Image 1 (cartoon, rainbow, N blue to C red):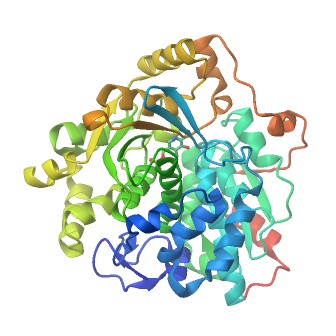
Image 2: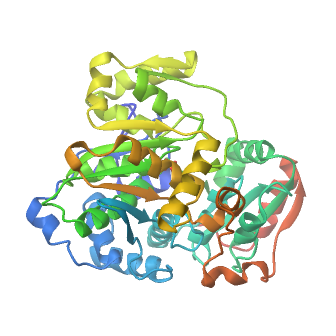
Length: 468
Ligand SMILES: *Cc1c(COP(=O)(O)O)cnc(C)c1O
């Protein structure tokens, strides 16, 4: 299996190079050269597998011959062993053919763990094969930092430095990062804002000498491997509800379009999906596009669902690539126009074709809280704000012809306790395995928002670790 760039000019690469590369050299995103295809008989054979075995089976054709399938099984078993539910990605029934796919049983209680726990191990596996080390550097306003740290902790070939704005992330979020006890994890509390942290990270990547010396890398949401691993839970849910004999609809709260693109990927490799429903908060570039056919940027506004406070959904380019019939050069010029003008339409016929599969619904903060309150009253379940948006979008738009609707729950309610308590009067509790979070010792280094101070810190910590 090889991968091509959505902008058509970067060289095609095998899986392991795509894993380490992130963005393609022409500014595009990597996608598989062809989608593998699982026949119905093969899909039936996936029934009853453990979640780890299912994941290994689903990702094997995407990985190709670069990693042995027996190694993928070991990696997946190890990745999901510590999850807080024996089904890993359990389905909960909320009504007649209304389901919730709970993707918050990982170490940091968000769906990002499902991919990152595998991706961290894949990085380590490939790097050790090559005798190389890398240094992951990232900035976080809260959520992604902890999932990345949990994915990279204790890995032999990786060091990870995460910058967060000092005093500006919630206590749960900070503690999820700073209480991780591992010699390769470094938390930097920067005296500044999230933008300062992001600028520092960008400056480090732009400093070629520094970047090459420490082999800087990122585990951001444009990495193909994350999408690939997420395909597995769509299969798990569909198999539990009768696939491939029955088609389904998924409703997904969406920010960068990674999660819902994985659902699209599941459909491309053979899963019967009737419709994909996108839920958005007030940062609604995608639902506006689906409604009117024009994609137009707008300033980001902060909401109760901060992981979806995004202006441009980077993974949407992967979908456009398919709807441009894989003409990367044409898409490159369209994306260039979008970057220049801040607005673009992709043609009515193309938009209609997209609308044949996708639909979108938007909720503001008040509506989100109302959904959390209602669902709690009706079912006793507490939803986090992101999950509530997906669920409501699914309820409003429904599946065609009575297709069962599965809403994807992307975070545990205890990650956003204030919003949930405000809506329901009930303060959600952390699961027992995380209950000592407030007692564990924190470890972080406070640094000024100054490039040379941060670079010196990283260089000093890495001294003595052998870079190949
Ligand atoms: C990251 C995140 C999302 C958005 O997922 P995308 O793949 O970026 O669309 C939604 N909910 C939660 C809780 C998240 O952490």
